[in-house]
Length: 509
Image 1 (cartoon, rainbow, N blue to C red):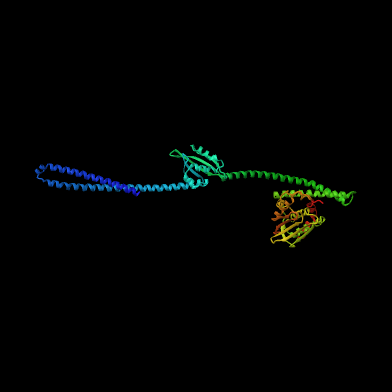
Image 2 (image 1 turned 120 degrees about the horizontal axis):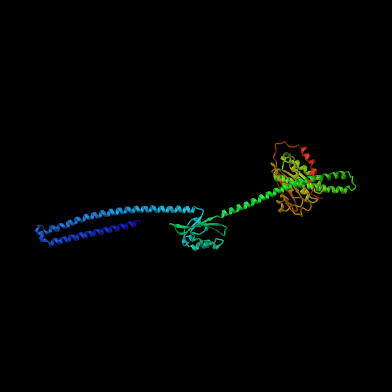
């Protein structure tokens, strides 16, 4: 910019010097002409008593005097012109610099706005050549700065096509949308699973089409969320249908269980009366055969009672109506009484029964009746799958804030893939393992539910062919009641005979 000022100033000075020289030349020529006239008219000068020398001598002085005035005038005009022109030029330069700074600032603001948007933006001219882009566009397409700097639209299109599932898709879109006069939205799919929504708008400069503005928006996450929402909606519908079916099934089981229980009790009562009158008193000739058949009938009646009771209790647990009678009991006595009550039965099967405990007394809040039912179920399972000559061991371990009850047998064991499934409802081991005894597959699921209602846990440790061990852990929390006396616990033991008959009814001789 300073070079421009210097050049302009030199030009102005040279023009003024030329004008000054021309003026001097013209003045000098005029003076010379006057002198020649005066010499030729010397006689007129003599008549006027004026000497030639005086006239000629006065002329150069006058000429020099006029030249200085002209010089000062010109210098004043030159300086004024230079000052004025330089002032105007400096003012214009300052305005130009200010406008340039403002333009740069606005350009940076515009670029920052474009970069801050979540969309990739590409601006092209009528021939499809890139005019501008933001950083998001470069990141979305993964284009290197070298490709963008070369600004070769064919190279950019080829690079983009390699990322798409449909290679012709982008080229057709570009060709189609290059002639658009209004906005249009389309979608493109990438090989890596991404989906872009493409908004193409004409670029209007002074209301004249000058190119196109491509707006790329990554809607992959939005589509995934939409798919998940649809899947969730479908699953919610299926869940509601499943709940409805489950409720219908529970109502059916509950109804059929209660309906079966009434006639079954009548049948069982009749069987017990016949057994008492004709078998125990030997009032019948073939009372031995009759007793045999009565025992079979009674066992199967007990088996139906067990099945119906389990179904009713499962429905109670599912509906949240299982009533637990928590009281402070000596858990050691509860477990010991129910274990020893089956000693005679296990002995009749040729299976040894061992009970051992680390402590003689451990008071905790529990439902003694439900806990006895749990122990009977585990002991009946142990007897079912233990051969004659085997053994069953019940151990109690004191863990301070909890107590462990272990029921271990030397039976056939459970396969490793069935350890977790064994507690599922209606789940049974392979038929080759359950051939010796029958079952509905409800017992262990009911056992787990009862233990969980005590805020406890149950787990199975087993190896096929080496036996199984069920480990129950119960918290030793105390209720507000006083510990129950031994007589109350003994009263449960007196009713265990029928319970054992019911619980062991699916074990055949």
